[in-house]
Image (cartoon, rainbow, N blue to C red; front, side, top):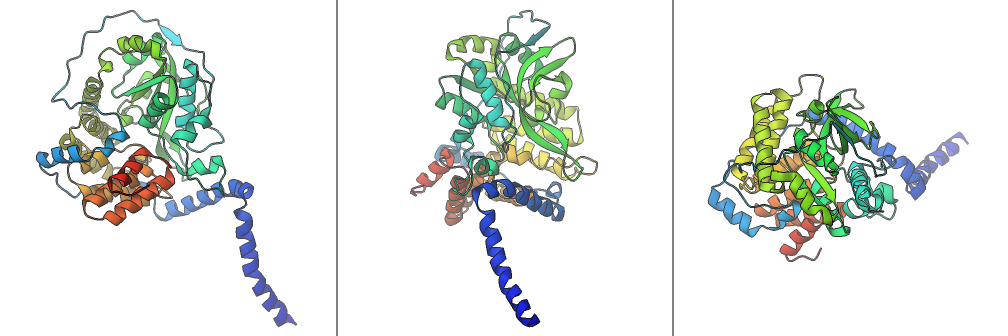
Length: 448
């Protein structure tokens, strides 16, 4: 009798397992449990292989400039990834801007505060919604996300869970949403500074800044993350900006000029900013921007900011500065200079991690400048190696569509066409209808 009970129990185990799996995939149950399972998986993976210990070692040498020029002419699909500009040989002289006295403080209103709570990786859609609300748009953060952060279209997942795997929204995607999906306009530039910020705000143009910050993670280490903030005011007496923070700091948060412009903050994203505006105010905005109206000048100015910081910093701050310098060169199509800067940035990065701050291993989650620089100087294996480190060693699941896309392009260039096609298809699974991946497949004669 005891033996029969034991046998019946053993037969019941697979039934219970199958039942548990079935219950897990019921949408309401999955929506509640999947984040906890994913979090547990990430903690186990990061415990075994700490992401801040992963490093990338560039191995290749750049090809001659003739090959670079040829590739730029024949591989144009990448230009959909960010706005293009005409190359320049050096810094553009700064035009004279008429000095207009600014008020001591500005605090813009006329928008509804939006947070990113109850969503995943939503600072992009939330901040863009506030900027659009300020100019009169009546949509919401989910309307933005459905276009630029659609996520995996798995019918077993609800809308929130579908977007969970998309860890980042790029600035060009936000600008594209405004220009393509609304009646309003948007532009982005590199090289912003506090003086420009005050001019914009005084003229009634709030802006979105992408910047980094440190936060203690689940391992109790201080980790670096990327984040958007909507800048709506300033106070010269206190030397502070007023920002709308969609996460921990909330509405009307005050942050010092110095902290905002620090290496780990705005500089880590090359001082990029996005302005959303009404079309009828375009001439006014361009006047306020002054030399920044010329994106070539702005990118050269960003490079100069980074070069000055390189000379006056060390350690992790110098890493951010070298990375920003490389980003500026990429924007200017100066790829040979860009790879020199990124090689130096990664060399500094590999020596970091000896204090209480982790290496900023999430950097490649948010930016793709090194991929472009290495690709357009013929360093295809470096593109693949950097993508693999990013996708396998720094994130719990390989769901960064930009990294997979660039790996696919590099695979094609070294003759691995099947691998390239697989990467492009995976990119579209993660981000349906994403233009660069569709174009890449069409270029290979394959229907997406």
